[in-house]
Structure formats: structure tokens, C-alpha cells
Image (cartoon, rainbow, N blue to C red; front, top):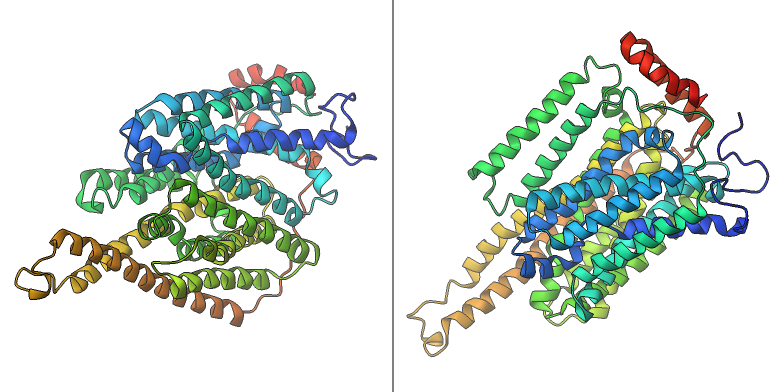
Length: 549
């Protein structure tokens, strides 16, 4: 049977009726994916407003936001299985309903476990709906299935929406209340569901593949490990790290989940993440680069808000306007990567060096220009460089993973590892390390700067000591941030030098296999599982398989 979305003549989407013009069909799915990407469980830009109205801590809201990323990462390993089990129409409607419920729950609940669980489920369905839309228009974006081109589109959507959703959330809270953002997205999701029911037909692929042989226990254990890791990074400073029973308990749970998963991977035929995926050279290299790179730019989460709010005196609207600078950098980074890496096939080494050079430029700008009287416009260059650097490194190393030579049955497992190391660890481990470094550095600098503030000092006899201590804290914060930016700049320059002197002539040639090839591979894996299934279960699954044929 012909491929589901094979390029037979002009590109067309059989799921959409013919009364919709053929040229407009892909834009319908782009509209869907934009709504889905805007629909998070919680909106981290409104964290301060949520803290004031729900009695939640900042760490609680961050944990919920990162739980959404964990749900997204866990979904990677099974997203193609779900895609070939249900039609695009069913997946979009189910995801829309779940995301609507998640927005309603997150706007009203004050229970941290419910908030975290809701965001985890929302992340899972958001990833599945995103795959449904993007895979449908993949051949429209790149008829030759070049993944370097495809990932430029993916990241210009995903990273841009992160910046734009923050802007929309803050201005919604400024003109109304933060809960209104949840209600607006609930309405847009309802509109999406209505359009899907009217404009998307329930077209099923030519081969029905049941959800058989998926290691759901392994999925739960990997999710437990990722949640424990995130809990330690987010709450570590609040609980004083391993001095608290909560952090020790999370450490034991995380290690237990990781150990059990590694043990199960030694004998399971199809573990959720196999050793073949974990030991791949490109995966290990990407993990190391992610840890170094995202730690270097982790000052985004630790310094920038504190500096702009506490020292420059920006209000929330001026703070969120800085997202526009990063947004422009993301657009420029994606465009640069598209024309150089995707089309002209520049080497991985060259693109990595460019990304680290941009990160070094970002750190150097803050190191040399950080002061009390910096204008908002002066922050354009460092934020532009940060946005461009982060999107370049993400596109380049995700493409390298596709080009790692792994069979497609293992490839989704690698995406889960990449999602955890790039999105989750990049957003939690680096800020935790930099935040702890800042705490110790600031305490030392405040002690040195405030050494002369004593009762017997005649210069401050008639001044309020509290005012002097406030000045000392602000001065210590500026000095500490400049010091840490300097250390990170040196690490960035050393990393850049190591990249430049290393040898690497590999160029991108990551071609996504045909959907018919993917289906045959998954079908073969399921049949292998069926042969090992007891007879009683085989009798139940056989009619489904026959109906699919």
C-alpha cells in the first residue's frame, strides 16, 4: 500500500477535506501547533503573581513547570507508537481536552502534588499533539526528509513560543489577572477542537499497530528518576540540600528508580530506554555539550531577573519586554542555522564553535557592562546572543543524534535522553549550581564590604545602619554577579578553544526514513512480542491485527 504521506505529486494532506485549498492545509496544522505550544500547565512568567494569590512557593511553581518538560521528554520514546495507533483527529481532540482540563486545574488548585501531576500529563499530551501536527506537514517542509531543515522549523516554533507566551502572560496579568491567561488558552483549545472536528477527517494509516510491548513500568521509573532529580535541583537551596530529609529521600528514590531501570534493561527485550541508546557516542557527546553549554548560560534563570528588578528597578512589563530581544535572537539563530548548517552543510564543529562564541559574547557583555545605570536597550546585544546561541546548539546536536546510525526502534529512546539532558537538566542543574555559587560568593563579598559598618565607626554615627546594610547587599550582588560572569566567561573561552583545536569534519546528512519503513519496523517489533505472548492474550489481540490489515 502507498505511503501515508508519500510525495505523490503536489503535497496534500488526506486528513483535511478537499474544500480546503491545498495550499492552506499545512497552515491549519501550524495554527494547531501554535495553540498547543502556548498551552502549558502553568505559565512560569506569572510565577510571582501565583505566589501572591495561591500561597504557593516559587519552587512549587518551578517544579510544576519542569514537570511539564519531563512529561514531554518521557513521551518521546512512545510517540511514534501512539501516532500509528490512533488517527490524527483522535490525537488532537484528546490532547485538546486534556490541555483544557489542565489549564482549568492549574488556574484553581493550590495542591502542589496535583499541580505537578497535572503539568506532567499536560506535557505528555502537548508533545504528542505537537508530533501529530509536525509529522503531518514534514514532507511539505522538506520533501527530501532532511532533519536539519525540519529541526530549524521545530525550534523556531518551540523556542519562539516560550518567549511569546511569557510576554502574553505578563500583559494579561497586567491588564486583568494571571488566571485569565488560562481561560484564554482554554477558549483557544476549544476552538482548535471545534476546527479539528469540522476540518480533520478520521483517516487511519494503512497499517494498524496496537500498543503492545511498551515498557510502561520503565516509563514510570524513568519519570520517577527525572522528577527526583528536578526536585533536588529546584528545592535544594530551600531545604539546605542534603541536610534535609526531603532531599535525602528524593535522592534515594531517584537512585532506586535509576538502578531498577538499568537492571531491567539488562534482560528486557524492549526496555523503555536501552543500553544501546545510552551508550551511543553521539548521545554521550551531546549530553556533555548540553551540560557545559546550558550551565554557562544558566545565569538567564539566576541573574537576569534579579539584576533587572532589584538593581535596575524594572517593573514586570519592562522585565518581560526583554523577551523580545531573546525572541529576535532565536529568529536570527534559526535563520542562520538554516542557511549555513541545513542548506550549505557546514560542519558540526563549526556550528558548535559559533554557538560557544556567541555564549562567550553573552557572558562578556554582562561582565563588562553590568552596572547600576544600564539602559534597557543596552541589554539587547547579550540577550540576542543568548537566544541565538541556545537555538543553534539545540538544532545542531539534535541533528547529530538523528545521524548517529541507530535503528529507528532505538531512535525515539535517544530523543527521550536528549529531551531530559537538553531541556530538563539544562533548565535545572545549571541554575542550581550557579545559584549556590552566587549564595556563597555574595555572603563573602557582603562580609568584606560591610566590615566597616560597626557602632564605633564615627563616619556612620548619625546614619541608619539598616540603610547601609541595604546598600551593602546591593553592592555585594553586583560584585558577585560580575565575578561569576567572569568565571563563566573563562570556562566558555576554554571550551571554545578546546572545540577549535579538536578535529571534526562531519557534515549534516540526517535523513528521516519513510513512514512506511517506520511502520514496517514497528510492526516487526510488535509481531516479535506477539510470538512471545501467551496464547490467551494472542487470541485477544489477533482480531485487532486482522482488522488493521
